[in-house]
Length: 193
Image (cartoon, rainbow, N blue to C red; front, side, top):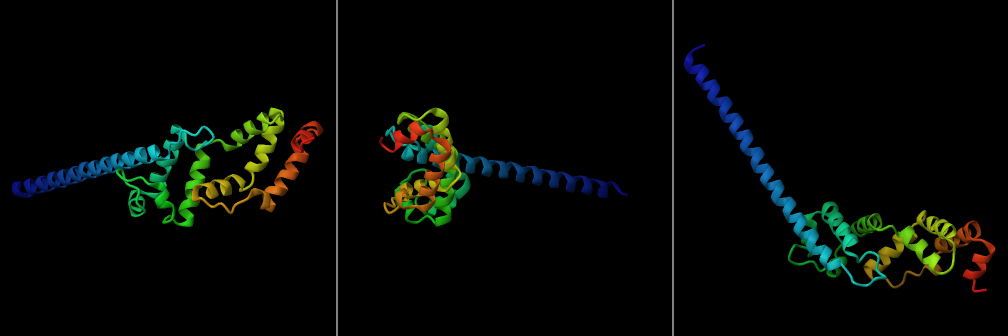
C-alpha cells in the first residue's frame, strides 16, 4: 500500500474516533442537562407536596422528595410538562384532573413505597390501646389488600365518595384480622366495651 493510502486510512480512523468521542460528550452533556432538569422539577414538586400537617404521612419532606423523584422518573419530564408540572410551575392539584388513571395508580404505588403505611397504621392501633403485636398483625392484614392504595387514591384525587365502611373487602379484612389478631380484651376495647 502507498503512503497516501495509509495516511488516508489513518485520517479516516482519527475522524471516526473524534466524531464518536464528540458524540459521546454531547450525549453526556444532554444527559447531564436532562438529569439536572429532572432534579429541579423533583425539588420544586417536593416543595409543593411538603405539608406541615403532622397527620399527613405523605407531606413530610423525605416522603415528598421520594414521591416527587418517583413521579419525575416514572411519568417523565415531557408528560409532567403536558399536565402543567415544570420546575417553575408545580401545581399538582391542577394536574390531577389531567393525569390518566394509570398515572394516578403509578403515583399511588410510588407514594406507598415511600411511606411505611403498615407501620403507621400499627402506631394508630397501639395509640388506641392495642398491643404492638396485635396492631402489627392487623396492619399487615390491611397491607395485603388494596385498602391503602384505594384510600391514597381517594385522598389524592379528592374523591369523597370512597368510604371504607362501605367497602366489602375492607370490612371482610377488618373482621378476619380482628378475629385472628386481637385478644378478647383488645376486641372489647375496639368494640367500645
